[in-house]
Amino acid sequence: MTRFLKFFRKEKAAMNHIILPGATIGILGSGQLGRMLALAARRMGYRVHTLSIDTDSPTGQIADREIVAPYDDLDAVRDFVRDVSVVTFEFENISAAAAAVAAAYVPVHPSAEVLHITQNRLREKIFLANAGFPVAPFQPVKSLSDLQTALHKIGFPAVLKTASFGYDGKGQSKINSMEDASEAFDFLEEEEGVLEAFADFSKEVSVVAARGLDGTFVHYGVMENSHRHHILDITLAPGRVSPKVAKDAVEIAHGILEKLKVVGVLCVEFFVTKDDKLLVNELAPRPHNSGHLTIEACVTSQFEQQLRAVCGLPLGSTQQLRPAAMANLLGELWENGEPNWPAVAAFPEVKLHLYGKLGARIGRKMGHLTALADSVEAAHARVVAAREALIK
Ligand code: AMP
Image (cartoon, rainbow, N blue to C red; front, side, top):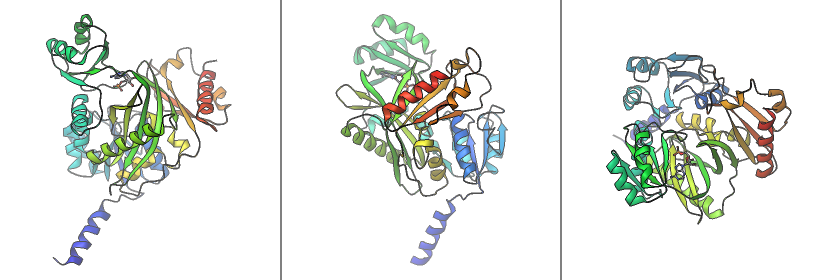
C-alpha cells in the first residue's frame, strides 16, 4: 500500500469517529446525569434516545425517545443501538453483556473494560493499587473468617463495603472492634465485600476530568466536597487545598484516565489525609455530582465535555469563570410539602436545577442549587442560605 493510501485510510477512519450535530446520542440509564447530558446535547443540535426501566424519567423527559426495558433485555438493547450513532452511560451498573451488544454496532464510551473495572470496588481497588495509585489498605472479604483475618491485618477503625452496586455509602459499615465484625458481615448480605482502613481525612475532594478520542486530557481542578449520611451535600470550587495537593490530585487523575484509556468524563474521588497526602476513594466513569457546578461556573460544562468526547469532537475549555458552590436538594426537603421555590428565585446568583423526579423520598437526589460569588466562601454561604430559604 502506498504511503498516501495508508494516510488516507487513517484519516478516513479518524473522521468516521466524529459524530456531528444532528446525529443521535444513545444514553443507557435515565437519571439526572442523563438529563443534564441530554440538555447539553439538544442545545448542540443532537438528538437523544434513552433506555432504562423507568418511564417519564429525568432523561426521558428531555430525550427524543424513551425506551423502557431492562438492561439485560439484549434484544431491546440491540433495537436501541440500531437507531443511535454512539452509546454512553449515565449509570455504571450496566451488564457487560449489554455493553458488548451495543459495541457490536456503534462506538461505546466508556468502554466495556472501563465499566467492568469501575462497577466493582474490589476490581477498582486492585486496578488502582497495581497501577501504583495511592489507596487506603484493603482486603477482599467473602466470609466472616476472611473478615476477621482482614481486620487483624488492617486494624481499627475499618470500613466494610459491598464490592458491587454500592454508591452513596449504601452497603457500608464502620467497624470499631472485633465484636462489630459479625453484624457488619451480616449487613453485606452474603455479597462479596472489601474491607478498607478508615481514612482519618481532613477533607474529601474530587477531580472531574475528561479524555478525548485523540487522548487530549482536560480537568476542572480540585473540587472540595462535604457529605451528609455518606451522600454528597456541598461542593465548592476551586477546592481549598495546598498547591501540592492540587497538583498531585490532577496528576493522579491524569494517570488514571490515561491508564484506563477513558474516552469521556471520569471523576476521581479522594481523601486528603491530615498529613496532606491523597488517597483515591472511588472512580466514577461519567459526569459526577461534584461537577454539576461546571454548568454555570465554567466555559464548558462536564456534560458538554462528555458529549464532545464521545462524539470525537475537540474538548472545550474548562476555565472557571467565577467561584462556585453547589448544594444538593434531597427528598427530605419535601417532607412538609413543596419547597418554597420563589424564595430561592429571590437569590439572583443562585441557579435552581430540578430533575423532574416523580416521588420525593428521603436521600433521593431531586435537584441541586449552584451559587456563584466573588469567593468560594461567599458562594458557600449563599448556596446554604438559598437552600435554607426553601424550607422557610
Ligand atoms: P463511597 O460510597 O465509598 O464513596 O463512600 C461514601 C462516603 O463514606 C465517603 O465519601 C466518605 O465520606 C465515607 N467513607 C467511605 N470510605 C471511607 C474510608 N475508608 N474512610 C473514611 N470514610 C470513608
